[in-house]
Amino acid sequence: DVCSSDLATAALLTRNEPLMRDLVAVLEAIDPLYKGMILNQYTLTRVLPQIRLNPNLGEALTHFFETDVRNEVRRFLHGPIGGDIRVVEDPLVFETGQDSLYDEVWLVNTNPVYQKEWLKIRDKLSDIEATKLVSFYSHPASVKVERSDRVLENMSDYASFRQMVQGHA
Image 1 (tube, helix red, strand yellow):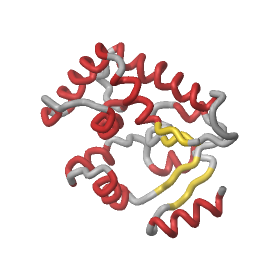
Image 2: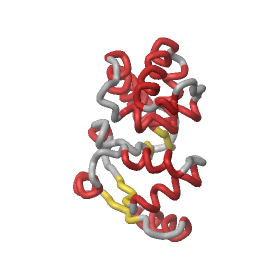
Image 3: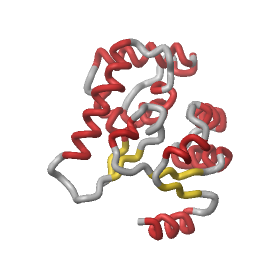
Image 4: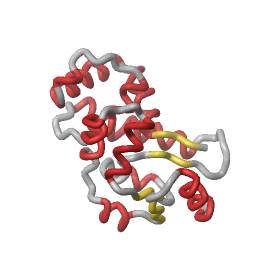
């Protein structure tokens, strides 16, 4: 079973109108480009990394990220549905301190240039948006490598990378 922490966060946020209003204010303070942005689950997943790492989050949003999202991930990890192996995709696992929730943390390490190109293709981001997103990941790769249980170096095409992951499972 697989869970995306950003999708879970977006789903929780869209059900909480007061937090959504606070979130819009935080986004507009981060960058005027977000003024008037329509927020839904898709658009939220694109901006969550920037929001999570923003030091000016209001008290309600900080509590939300530190408590509600963590509880949602725990429900997924320990819930009765699914198989024995559960995977949570979380690009900010170390920055948000959520690595303590998991038995193992696997890091897919890549060159920031490749990362930016993949974000542009996968999320249909502009070059500026992708550059901003990559720059918001605050922990250096060397720290993430040191803190991870397994490290997969992704410096190749998708088929080669998939074969490497299957070899580690």
